[in-house]
Image 1 (cartoon, helix red, strand yellow):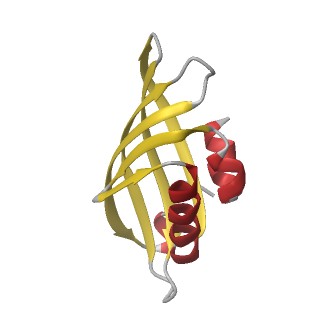
Image 2 (image 1 turned 90 degrees about the vertical axis):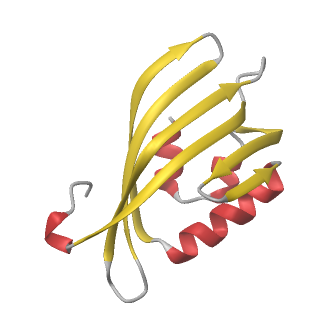
Length: 117
């Protein structure tokens, strides 16, 4: 469900999966709350065209999940990238994500190297 929501590239839809006071670490940005998440996602998807994401469950225990992910996108000049890394998620009692810690790396790729179409 998280993968489908993120692939929609709809900040409103994605933000609803997070608690109102959710905390994020995304690369060098630290966010708190749905409004900050929505704004971040608007900026992200304005830059990352053609965005497609794939997530893989690594493990879970109690209210915590670890996933690996990769996504592909291109910039305004047409250069493709593969971004990949790991996320740690923590959920509240209502099932909303209250914490998201993401470690992300970017690699330039050619259009012919894409794996997520």
